[in-house]
Length: 236
Image (cartoon, rainbow, N blue to C red; front, side, top):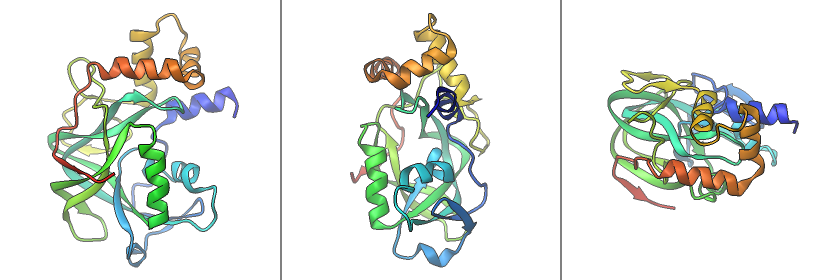
């Protein structure tokens, strides 16, 4: 991958995603079919996992993957930047409590083998754990509302900037009280604070190419981070 493509990938998180429910089939997007969710585990997708592009990166190595992706709205939460840098150069997302807000997200309905793949991509880097959120209000586009949901919960807490969390401007949210920014803007905030001697592109490329440097920056961000604010039952 060229440097220009790597830079675009880092800054482009969480990537484009449909604002209505769909079925992902081997990289293609098809109309949603509720009956296809039977026997699958519903997992919240609030960052790039609601993007067909990211699903292809995770599941495109094998043919035949079918994943129903249902839109939903989660009350009293928002999607914010986590206090960690990814190996593809982005600052990833996490859920966080935000009273009065109602954030739009997706539910990926995963078969057992798909859940294993998703666990590997989300849990192996120690940035998230898998758990059940209880006593919530999740409205779903094609199925009944529920008060429990499965999700990958941020281990490192949310990125703290000017005294608060920062929401992903790419993710819609009713009654949002938090400031919203793009991933590109957040990367520039980190650069100015921790690597002002690097130019913007050079900084991201160093994050990409130097795991020790990336981990060191994550450790600095985590020093002032704020933990996930809702009770969660760890499952993996």
